[in-house]
Length: 270
Length: 342
Image (tube, rainbow over the protein chains, first blue to last red):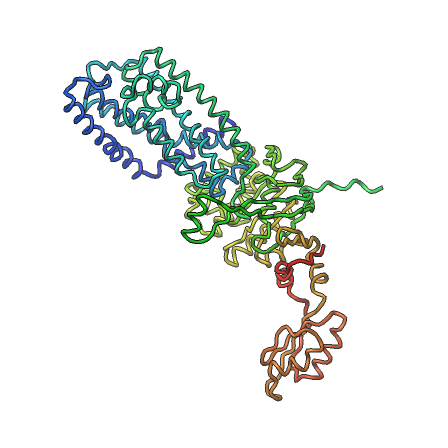
C-alpha cells in the first residue's frame, strides 16, 4: 500500500466519522463521567476504611488522576469500537471486495483504525486540560516534556499492539463463525492485566514481575505512569521494548494466520 | 499457415470446490447436542468445471440456486481457493492474488455492496483511483464516460446509502470498471432492480463489451439478461457443467419439438379442454388444454402434418407455430437430475 493511499483511507474514514456528531459528544462526556464515577466512589471508600494516606503507592488524589488518564489515554490505545470489523468482514463475506483490491488488507484496516482514533484524541485534548484544571495536579506529580514523550511513545506502541492483538484474535473467525466471546475476553484481560480496572501496583510483587513480560502493561499502566512520572526512564524503556517485541510477534502471527485463514475463506454462500 | 490462436482470457480446468458444512438438528435439543457433538457434511459445490472465455466474449453462467455459479465465479476471481483443479485468468493463477492481475480484473456482486455506505460515490471513486493507481486524466475521462452512459452523473455527490437500488447498482458498475478491467465477473448484476433499471444495465453492458472487448462471465437468474446479453451459455446443475455452447443450440439440443398453439372457436360445439386433448393427443404432447386454447409440443419433423390435423379436427380460429421459450428450456435443464449431456 502506498503512503498516499494510506493517507487517503485515513482522511476518508475521518470525514465519515465527523458526520456522527452526537456520538462524539456522548462518548466524550457521558461515557467519561460514567467510567470515572464508579472508581472514584470505590477508591474514596477504600481510602476511608483503610485510613491510609497511600494505597498501592498512590494517594487518593493520584488515584483519581490515574483513572481519568487511564480512561482518556486508554481510548486512544484501544481505538474506537470498530475492533470487530475484521471478524465481521470475514463472517459476512465483505472481505471479498478487499481480496480483489491490489492493496493489503491489514494496512487498509489499520489506516481506518487510526482514523477512528481522532475522536478519542480530540476528547483527550479537550478533557485532559479541563480535568487537570478541575481536580488539580498533586504536588508529587510533575509532568515534564520527557514524561509526555514517554507517554506518547507508550500510547503509540500500545495502540499498534492492541490493534495487532485484536487483528490476530479476529482472524480466528476464518474457522469459528462467532468470536464475540473471544473479543470480550481479550478486553476483560486487557482491562484487568493492563491496569484499567485497578493499577498494576495493587497486584502482588510476583504477579507484577510476571505481568511485565506480557503485552498488557503497555496498554494502560505504562502510558499513565510514564505521564505521571511514576515510572523511571529505565522502567518505561524496558516496558516499551517488551511491547515492541510483542508487536513483532503478533504481526508475524497475524500474517501467518491470515495466510492460512484465507485458504479457508468461503465468502459466504455457494 | 493459421496464426496461433489467442490464449483464452479465462480458463478453468477441472475446477472443484467442496465445503464442509455443520449440520444442526432443529430446536433447542439439536443446539444442545451440537455443543458436544457436531455433524459435518461435505458439499460439492463445483465438480470438475472446465471451460474457457475469450476476449470480447460475454458468457452466461446459469443454474438453479445452489448450483455453484457464485462459487465458480469466486474461485476465478481469486476470492476463494479451489479444492482441486487449475485456473488461469490473463495468464495468472487467480487465488495467488497477484496485484498485476487484480489491476486488470473486476467482480461485481449484485447482492453485496462494495462501495462505502457512508460516502458519496465521488469519494468512493477517488479512493478506488488510488487503490488501482489510475492516472488522473484517464480516471476523469472514464468517470465522465461511465456516468454519462449510466446516467448517474447527478448522483455523484450523494451518499451511497441515500441512492435508490438501481442507482447504487449503476455506481457499483462504475466503480468496478473505473480501472478498465480486461476480465469482468458479474454475479447477478440486475438482481432486485425494476425493469427499466435492468434494461439500462443490459444496454450498458452490451455497449461496454462492444467498445472495450473484455472477457465477461455473467451469472443471472433473469432469463432476459441471458437471452439479451449472451451468445454462449454454460449451464450448471448441482455443481456440474451440463451444457456449454451457443445459446441458440440449447433449443435444438434440449427441445426437439415446436409449440403449436390452436385458438378454438367456442361457438362451434362444446370443445372442452379434455375433448380437445383426447382428439389431438396422438399428434404430440399436450402442454396446455384450456377452454378455447390447446397447446401442443410436436416433434420438429411432424410439425406440418400435426398443424394440418389440428386444422382438420378442431374448429380453429387461429393457429401459431413457435420455437419453445429458451428460458423455459434452460429452467427445465436446470431442474432435471442426471443424464447430463455436453
